[in-house]
Amino acid sequence: MLYLRRDVVAMRIAITNTHVGVLEWIVSKTEVGKVQNQYPERPSELNGREFIRKATYNWHCNADAAYSVLQQIRPFLKIKGEQADLAMETQDRLRVPGLKADRSWQNEYRLRMKELNRRGTAPLDQEG
Image (cartoon, rainbow, N blue to C red; front, side, top):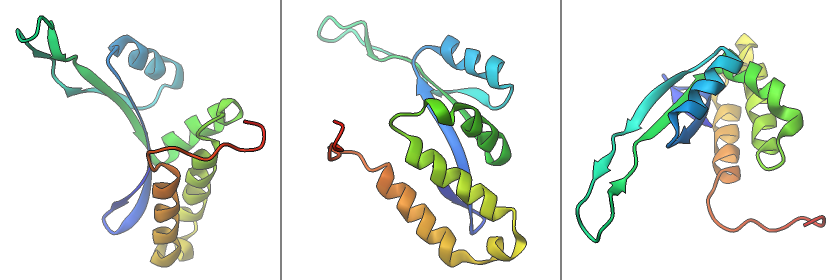
């Protein structure tokens, strides 16, 4: 994702899962980021269900750490490749002082990322 941080665009990778072990494995392999409890478990005694919601955990990393992870996994991305490319291009541009001061392209990139991440049905490409 690209988000505003102190009026400048910043990059973040985040993965959410109900299995904390998967996220801890990601930390052990990438050696970056941290795991946090996003939502605690909510038990229920209604409708015979054990839980209303399982506990949810979140792994995230920012900026150069996220860039490093994206470089490593980019060849394997089939669905989020375009977002990874845009995020890495953003981080490259933020390293140039003159470009970091220019907010116009940052806003454009943030809106492009928002559109790429929009939920809903995406059109299929020619290959299906």
